[in-house]
Structure formats: C-alpha cells, structure tokens
Image 1 (cartoon, rainbow, N blue to C red):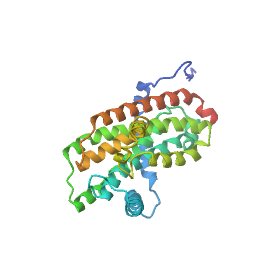
Image 2 (spheres, rainbow, N blue to C red):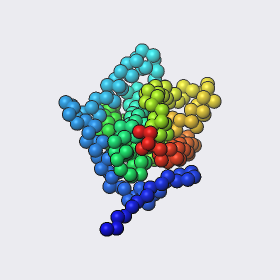
Image 3 (spheres, rainbow, N blue to C red):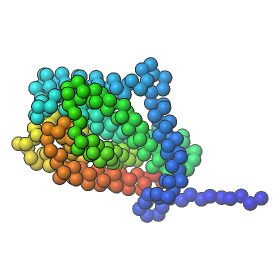
Length: 279
C-alpha cells in the first residue's frame, strides 16, 4: 500500500503571500466569515439590534459630553449628531476589526493546531464580519439625515467604496501585526483596548480637524501616521457637502493604509510558521 506523505515546511527567507493557495482555500474563508457573523449575536436577547443600539447610544452620550458640555461643534454648521455619527460609523468598524483580528489567532488556537491552512484567512475573515455591522449601523445615519433634512451628496456616495477600502486596509494591517504579536506576547490583548481608545482621541472623531489649524504640524503628522483621519474627514465632506473633498488628504490616507497593510502582511507571514508551536 502506497501512502502519500505531505511535508509542510516553513519558508527559509522572507515569506510572501501565496495568492494561489489563498484562492484554493476561499471556501474556508467564507465559512469562517459566516460563522463569525452568525455567532456574533447568537443567544442574545436583542440579536442584531445591538448593531444599532451600540453606535446610537454612543452617539447620544458623546453628543451630550462633547457638544453640550464641552462646547465642541462641527465647525461648518452641520448638526453635531450627524457630524459625530458619520465619524463614529467608520471608527467603530475600525476599532472592532482591530480588536477582533488581534485576538483571532489565539481564539482559533485549536483549529490552527489541528490542521494546515493559510493562517491569513482567519484575521481576514474578521475584517469581513465587521462590514455587516457597518451596513446595519448605516441605517441610523440615513434616518438622522432624513430627520435633519440632509440629502446625501453624489460625491459622498461615489467615494464611499474608496473610504471603505481604505478603512479595511488600515484595520486589517494593524490587526495582522497585533494578531501575530499577540501569539507570542499575551500582553497585547490588554494593550489593544487601551491603544484603540487613545487612537480615537488622536483621530478627528468627536472634533473637526479644523480645530488643529493652529497646530499644522500635528494635523500633518496625524494624517500620515493615522489614515483614519483622512477617511473620516473625507466621509464628512462627502456626506454633508459642507466642505470640498480634499483629494490630497484622501491620497495620503490611501497610501498610508496600503503601507500599513503591506507591513502587517509581511510581519504576519514571517511569524506564522511558529504559530502552531507557540499556541
């Protein structure tokens, strides 16, 4: 009897993504993504309503604290709830995806230890899961725009796919780096929530980027190291039409997010050969 023996060996040098192998495992990718979506609100009383409740309550609380108490406004006449929610929508996808992907390898440790498949599939499927919440939560923004009598501008609709791609690349790039780091150093899971919270205040989510006019260096630095700054500012400009879309800012965000994704993929693929042993 001739037994076929498969030998899987790690790459000797810098690892690159095997796109043909990823394509062969595309069914597993969709199975894991669908599993995460269905399990997300399983056995909860309110189900998918949580995707509406969480951003809505956050918007109400932040509006009271930052607008009514702290006196922060949109700066261009846009009602603050719409201004805030259009930023929160993208930010919540980013923060949930970074948190989910960073812990995805540890939470799937039994699967990783038992069988071989491209490890990149697990964190990538987490990035898809957050898009379901993004779509559901978008309904609140539509309702608010109807309530305040705002019509979505054509430019905002046209650049939405670009902004989403930029957000996914940024979140996945950071998530891949943190996921690989979390396998070796479990301190990462404690640092990620703190890191995301600090980043929110370094991103113009609750305040307009125009507040940084007197600190031009901070605005420029924020734009280059944090692509979400350009995404959120461009989304607001496109949705409300109160300001022109800054193509320069959007281009920098796209470039920075692409660099982040490449760096995250390189670090993840170079570390993945040891995942099964460490986990």
